Amino acid sequence: MEITIKRTETNKAYTSGTLYANGKAVAHYTLEYTRRMLPAGTYQAVLVNDPKMQRRQIAIVADDCDTTVDNPHIMATLTNGNSYRNVKDTPNVVIGEKLIPGVVVSSRKVFDRLFDRIEKCVARGERITLHVTDNSMTERQVPTFWLVPNN
Image 1: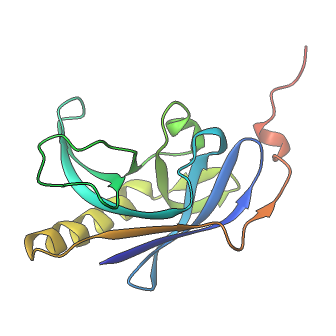
Image 2 (image 1 turned 30 degrees about the vertical axis):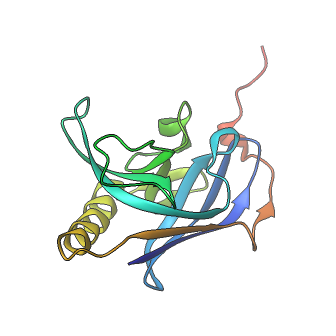
């Protein structure tokens, strides 16, 4: 399976884009914290157990990583959430639908649908490749509702 994240806008707070699976838009809105975003390039997506969350997650690892190792080095994860603030401390990608700039809705539904597709591919022994591109990304100002007023 080929997953592509095409980044479209960036500002000082967050970077947004669209996630495609085999050329079809699956998550019409992705958010990353700009200071912690995954560098553009090619990666592998694998399913790993997360004991802290008590569930499996979609992990992003280096393209040449040996995924047969029990604990591959996780560079980021695809996750559900409501805004870039959910992933402010880690280089993760929130997926879902756009409510307003910087805010995601239907994230759990979109995440579960993508997770099921990836799980079926893994069961068939397919490799999951993730491409991250910045080609059509434009710079924008941070929306005023994300700014903290100065006192």
